[in-house]
Length: 263
Image 1 (cartoon, helix red, strand yellow):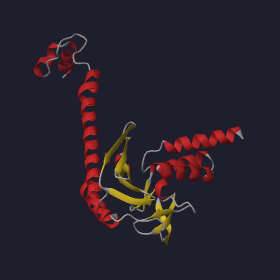
Image 2 (cartoon, helix red, strand yellow):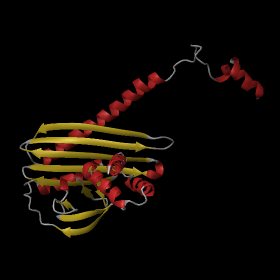
Image 3 (cartoon, one colour):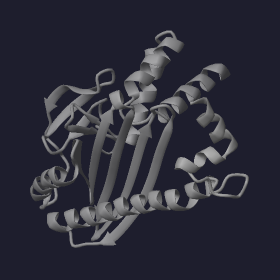
Image 4 (cartoon, helix red, strand yellow):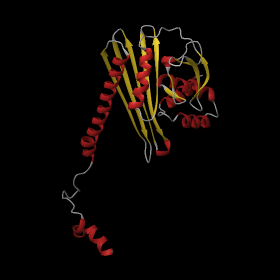
């Protein structure tokens, strides 16, 4: 029993660490190791999707916020549909009509229209969103992805906003993986909040402002990393404490003269 619990914990931990867009490769590897124990693997992947959020069929968002409580499906409140997720293909399957019991906010349709435009303006690659009304709260989930395994990088921008009683709170997560001749990963998490009068325009303006500020912070952090920390890692002078004069003067150095004489 103990070994089974440890195995489940191990598989869950490995799946949680998978970068965005790389679930299929991770599942194939785990299936090979675990002799196709798909039940355990699929359960961990489903948990990963619920917690991290995923874009399926390039248009639907699956997450814990729009998980249907009475089945294994997810709710698309915009299209008023239920759908399952094919874990192997990351596509939406078993679609069916859904009549929501939740009350939609008065600005719902306007927000849908403006989120569509916001995606066209700011997300050049895969973009998906959903709006989830829950009681006196409204969740807005935005996911942007750029997945290019052929060129050794994947990335995901995941924003979740909660509107309630004149306040809005957001959590922005960025996960980028670069793996050509190495393995570099960036995880960035930023929280934001504010007071707004609930309307589609005000919500979009807050989202736009928050995501612009986060983008600039990431750029500033990279510049500081390059100009301050990486610069300090480089040796500015050789061990002789003298600058090397490249060009014709290289022949004056022992190593340079050896090369010049050989030529």
